[in-house]
Amino acid sequence: VVAMLAANTMPGAYYDAVHWKPFGDLAVFGHELDLHFIVNDIFMVFFFGIAAKEIAESMLPGGALNPPSKAMNPLLACLGGVFGPVGTFFLGLWLLTQLGVYTDADDMTALQRGWGVPTATDIALAWLVARTVFGQGHPAVNFLLLLAVADDAIGLGIIAIFYGDPTHPARPEFLGLVLLGMGAAYAMRRAGVMSWIPYVVVGGPLAWSGLVLAHLHPALALVAIVPFLPGPRRDTGMFRDDDEIDRMGDELAADLHMEHSPLHQFEHQTKLFVDFGLFFFAFTQAGVALADLGPMTWLILASLVVGKTVGVTLFALAGRAMGFPLPDRMGIRELVVASHIAALG
Image (cartoon, rainbow, N blue to C red; front, side, top):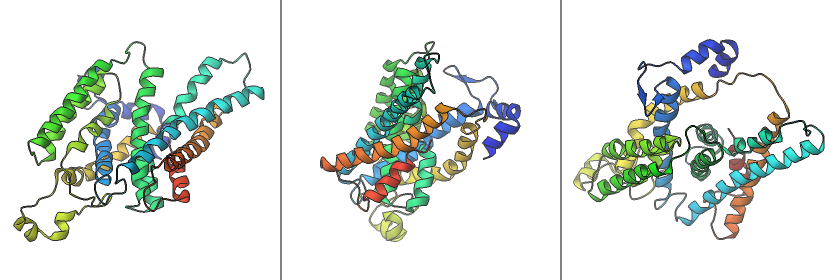
């Protein structure tokens, strides 16, 4: 709301705020460190890291996505979340052409390039709405988180392949740095490192640098690192501050030589920072100056609302028919609602 008001009443001041440079002309890999870059490309790394933590924990014994076959269903549903909007977009564009809304005089090549816009899922907004609708700890939230993270990963590929900057083409060879970061995290886990900080400090920058140099969005850097953090023996429940150590008591845990897992500590020690930081993410992203409404506006909206809802639902049901079940407590009703929430963008 703050961003929308600012962008439409004080556009100059809003632009200056979003592109404020707290570190002057300092740049990283050619990117100026303005507020937009700091929030979008650095801060959001931690948000996606927490999302990866929740997904990794939900695959542990007792989790909503355990056994791993349950994780296949949201991954298949994610494909529906891409193909559904794309199919709806091209169908709608064809109908608008048949109705004479768009004619030969229009630049159809430019209009067709809009297909990539409705493929995205806003994971931050979808996560908030899902928690509100389903309640904390409902398996549908895990389902939606995994779907949204996979959706964003596919989105990185779509942007790199179909919407790349000709002056800065994708350089996939730098993704080797991501693999190097994953290797470092795996080595630390094998060595028994029981603090999350070395994993993030060593593996995180390697993965982040690889994505930036490959000209891909680096927000997913910790998604490749966090699953290597040693976790609890069982899923402790989504976004819970207590784990199995808290529940048995400090004295008993000390007698058994047990301590909080690095996976638990990572979320516990970063979540407050991430929660506050999400305001700045929304502030730097949502400032859209309202100028005009046209057929393409409604086509994009329909592709999101109809295409996502139908695509995710059908692909998830197809996955269930193939032997990849939905999480427990997720029926048709919960699936349709989760699919609709995935349309938020």
